[in-house]
Length: 194
Image (cartoon, rainbow, N blue to C red; front, side):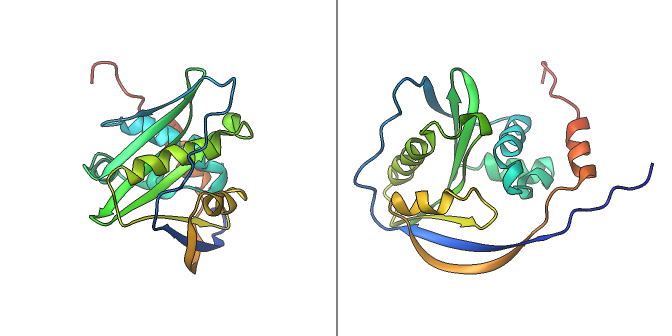
């Protein structure tokens, strides 16, 4: 069996957005949904990687999946990082990650839903919850970035919720190759005793 070809790098335009005042209205949870957001303190690395893969594989989120355990743990277990997991009907359905980058800024680093949770009205509600959480520390600004490879509704949603674009730049995104995906699948599962 020969080596698999590496996927071609993709060009993207990254839009940087910021919000200088909290949103006036936080959208309510859509009716007839059993959803909850729970903060994951010291989230296990394997569960974090599962969330990244399930939410971001379609949008080429690969950076965190390529990190070594120590590097990833240093970021997601930092005191300045807050991760909230969305559950719908008791099963994981998405997550958001906030990082206090400075005393005056909170960045919405990751935000997204798993495929089975999309088109149910949860995105706007969860973004409202993420923003309420970000503003709870009274920063001067809340920032986020998105790119042209993300879900097409991402940029319009951010703008509807009050973010304003402040800059753009080009980026090269390197999708995960088959060998990297296979290595993740073969990784040792977590043990129950440790």
